[in-house]
Image (cartoon, rainbow, N blue to C red; front, side, top):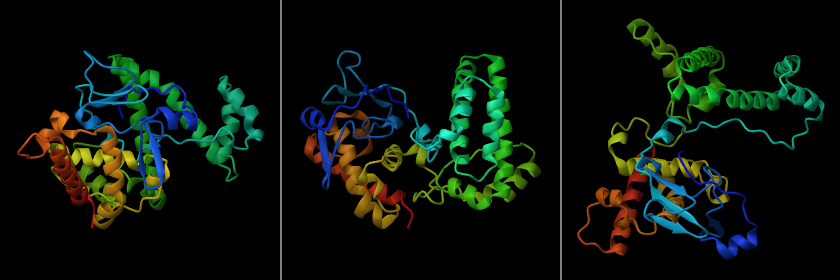
Length: 324
């Protein structure tokens, strides 16, 4: 998710109560600091919107929230949330009881390859440190790879070749892992819209891959969303509803984590009240957003009438996207 918002420290509860704009979902108070991912209120990145710490351009912004949150239009539409749906970096708690491996961790951080060997052996042991070490290795690997990715993006041919090698090697390994561990892999693939595979132009190889691998992954089967809806990319209201579903699903506050699985019934009874409040917090006046005016047919420029019509259309779209 593209966001220019950087929150430098979260203030205490009393200061947030006094100085931060907020809304309520049931008995839960939510303000601009409540959101876990991406660390700021909802922004329709599918329309090019983003949060910043100050006014953009000549003071133009969509929404201003206390204390200094500005929602602006960057002009860069971004639908990456679809590709990244259900994907998250494995995290570990620094407070975990890992005293027995701390020495190896410290040595590993200094580049000691023997320490890497010792930690790697832990991954093959079903003991309590295996999961912790796997997450540590992945986070460390990503820190090392990110500069190479940035160099590749800038046109460095060596970096491009290196990223290609890593992508090919890990995807090839993942295909083998999937064949041996269908049940565990399906727990991940059913909650995503995309899955990495090696594609070939050879019809026999491509067909075999689809028959033996892709068909068994049930990609998107657990998202609660009609994955085979063909007009998603051409329906901006649908993309807005999808981004709201994705955004809320990644939040850690009670109103989000307590939601039942998404389907036609729960979309209207449980999900919509949360979607409505979170959307309205960021966009209190939809009539003031040109893209929203193009999504809904309306007869007069009345802010309250348009907001009602727009929210009704967004609710209907949410329900239409949900599985039965």
